[in-house]
Image: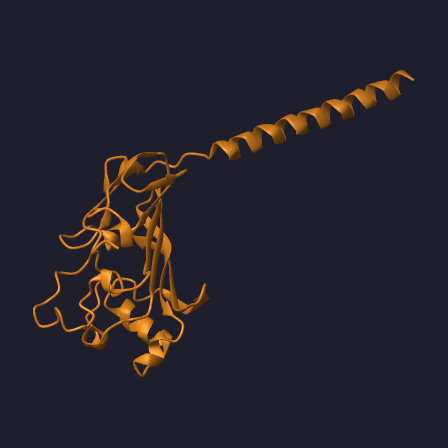
Length: 225
């Protein structure tokens, strides 16, 4: 596993975090420079018990030290359970794009003209400290976590011009546990309609016109009979 890192500066820094960590960021960018999305922060079920706490409490502490947590203080936090992980789901709507601006130590999103640009380091901590190195304590280095699941997905309003992640439609996804040192993506900030939606509208219009033509033909036939 590559040596990407996630900010963890709570009491759990001083103990070995042997359970799996799940961190998923799903962001949807809007043309009006707002962001809607969900963060999932969770640990393998039972991990918290090993350290005298609950899985949810452990996840809350991990989230509290994530850079966006303070700015998203008004987000809705709920329980998360799935695929053997327990933690929290943090949902937010219409947050200012500035909340997610890139920094020298963390990836983020900014608007440049008619495009949204994702840039910055995929890790968000400094290197392990000398005090923690070699002690078995968790230093923030994700290579110490077994099978950590760490993903970021960002959906753009319009077409994606370029990205160093996996592109599917208008969404780019990165695996932070085995991915690039920096996140890079550029996509249109102008909303465009999905081709499938356009085809559905066309099909509906054709069906509607056909129904109208059929009804008119029936009316004419009745008059002539």
